[in-house]
Length: 420
Image 1: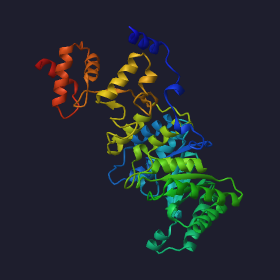
Image 2 (image 1 turned 180 degrees about the vertical axis):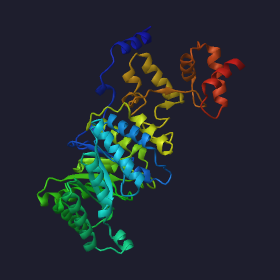
Image 3 (image 1 turned 60 degrees about the vertical axis):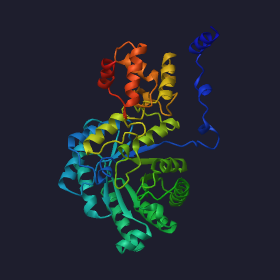
């Protein structure tokens, strides 16, 4: 009697969030305040450099563009129109969609620091009637200079000429140094200063080969901020990272904490080699840190559509958007979720075994039956199938699950009942 009363009391007096979850992240010094955070989506440009990716149809690109809008992306790279006629046509169509549908996404396009790459961007911008930011890039590290037989004078000349040409033709410019994280400070300072003096009003710090660690990122961004400050110009700082050491998201968060204002990423981290910073992971972390309030209910669809369009599957265990992100076949885990649901509190059920609420990204907790399951899993699945979970049925399905080497699908669950 006493035990049932205590259970009843819990269901009628659920503690608030701070009583149920102790947040070490909120302690002083572990979660810094940041300013306005913006996001630049590289899925349709840098993401397509993955050797496994296919170039999507323009219809798929348009769908992805609208999904970017739905999750609060501020700007997007539409491609490199200087690469081919198809690229130019696709960039123009995407820019027209932004114009005609009044999307809140600012377009940009990649270009080497050569006039031949920049001219098509300016032409498309003039044809469509909206400004397209020129993201002109050049390798800056000593190892790149050595491989290419470049020197700093050549880098400065190409950078100044490219930025000045774009600015003189009315295009906003983001000057991008490739491999910034392996470039000496004096080279970083000279290149950014030259680009800013030529008219660039945004600079992009790149971890092109995924070399950086968070402490290194903070040191680099602090240095770049000092370079910008000395110019006396109002110049924004972007961060662009890769996942070669699996630190892309963590490095990007460090860059934002250190003073970068716009972060780059791609859908589920698709990109060259090991990929880019995953935009989905970046968004969910920024949301949970309280840095943004974006509606992320379409986040899973954004990744799913991108995956289908480029022909690269999302790993099943990919956080938040992978098929297994909110799915369990383990008895202890499932029992906790089921007990939380029994209290009539979906907030509780969505967090008792989840660091990320499934509902935040338009998903829900899923309970399956498999070799690691308990009776509560079976009871839950039978109820979901509209079958009364009496003891005999639960025993029969559980026996089949323990003999299996995988999660049972609905057909296998029903078959186990027939055999019994």
